[in-house]
View 1 (cartoon, rainbow, N blue to C red):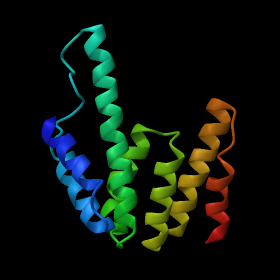
View 2 (cartoon, rainbow, N blue to C red; view 1 turned 120 degrees about the horizontal axis):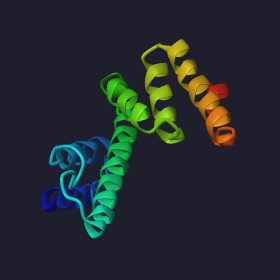
View 3 (spheres, rainbow, N blue to C red; view 1 turned 120 degrees about the vertical axis):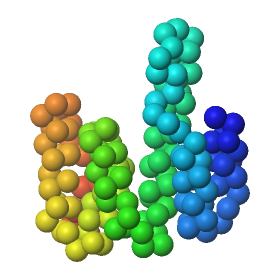
View 4 (cartoon, rainbow, N blue to C red; view 1 turned 90 degrees about the vertical axis):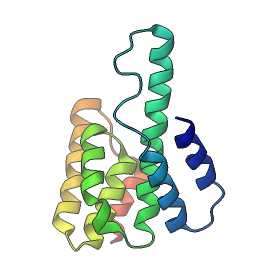
Length: 139
């Protein structure tokens, strides 16, 4: 855990997206599944949730950075899994759409948007944020 936090903090000091993403990858490599999975304690459950949220936020930040230097082809699979795990996360969906679009898979990118739009409407009764909807018309 300390190594993860050290690398994550170190990434905050870097200036280029590629260096930052590489450092975040080293931080993420410290993880082996969810935190404190086999321990049942109310106190530790809160810590485990916080740690898992931190890991997901770090992954999202990392793949967002990796889109900048053109690593879009490398992150499609990871983003697909991340969106499957967090099906209402518009940021992850947007990153996946950008990666697919840059891989010349525009039809699949639109399918990601359409699935998210339908899930938000049918299951939560909301529409995607206006900013997210604009990214489908900007390309």
